[in-house]
Length: 167
Image 1 (cartoon, rainbow, N blue to C red):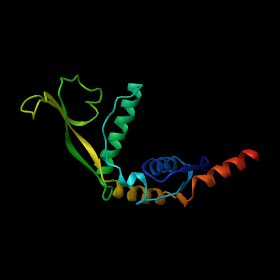
Image 2 (image 1 turned 60 degrees about the vertical axis):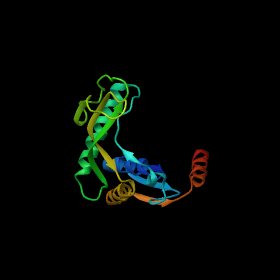
Image 3 (image 1 turned 180 degrees about the horizontal axis):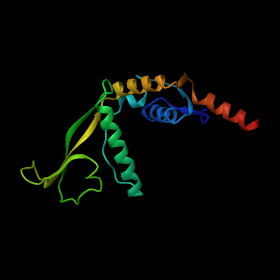
Image 4 (image 1 turned 135 degrees about the vertical axis):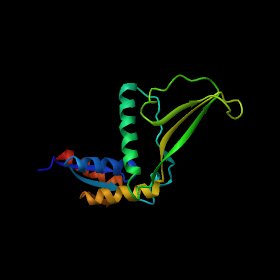
């Protein structure tokens, strides 16, 4: 027996990813969206995994680590549009070790032979995501799990919400 039914608004990377995780955890899911790929904001977004500083750090570091590992797994599957690549971040001032350095593969500090007035560089492996390909893969995965989608405008949803509150 399922856990219930969820309505997800939007069919970009967040909506599809949420729908997939809900389906994988026993929920029925319907996505309503005005647009689907290739016409979503996500289709034109640049995408790579990069940790960012936000609070509470212990939770965001754990979430970031989990996301990194999922993207590494997806990069090994065909047709996801995800590749893992060595990346470089240059600094003009010396930096402390980042809290996420043990999360990524191949982390190293470079301090010699840098361009211009850069004094330090972090290098590590991260994901680069070709969004139109990835969105196609996400939609295929969502459909294979039994998710439903409808082209709907948010105004219709708000009307339904108002009606359900009146009942």
